Length: 209
Image 1: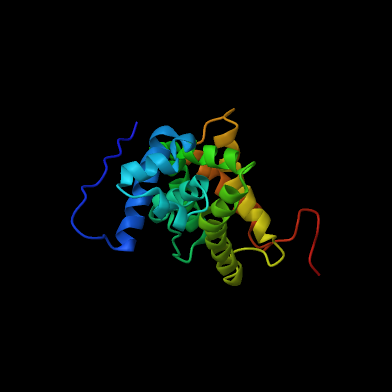
Image 2 (image 1 turned 90 degrees about the vertical axis):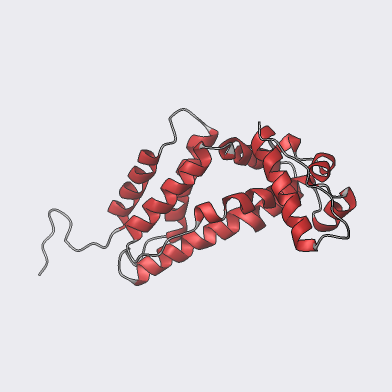
C-alpha cells in the first residue's frame, strides 16, 4: 500500500499549479496503492490538504481525476525515443511500457481504469484525452516518420501496426493466460517489423524481367 501524507498547511493561499500538482500526487498514490475505487474526492482532498470544491472545479468526476493522475505518473516513463531506427525505438518504448505495467502497481491501476471506463463516460473521455489518445499519437508519429524514411512499406496500415504492438500488451495484462515480459515486447516488435519491412526481393517462385 502506498502511504499518502497530507501536506502541511502554510499561511496564505498556495498557487493553483502547486495545489493541482499536490492533488494529482495524492490521487496517484491512492490509485497505485489501493486501486481505482480508492480515488474519491473525499480521500484525495484529505490526502492533498485541499478542498473538495477545488477538485470539483477542475475535474468532473473522481474517475476523470484518476485518469489524469495516471497520465501524469506515466508520462516521463513512456517518452518516445527518435533515434532514426524504428526497430530500436519501438523496442525501447514497448519494453518501457511493459516495465510500467508490471511494476509499482501501474498494471492493476490501468486495468481498473479500463474496466470502470466501460460504464463511466467521464472517466472514458478523460482516459482518452489524457492517456490513450496522446500515447497513440506519439506511436503514430513514430511509425509515420519510419515510413517516410523507407523503413516500412508504403502500403502498411500504420494504425493496425500500432494496435498489434500495444494491443497485444494490453491483452496479456487484462487476460493473464501468458506472462507480460520485456522479452515478449521485443518479440512483438520483431514479428511486426519483419512482416512490415519493405519488399526488396521478389516472392519465391517469381522472377523479375
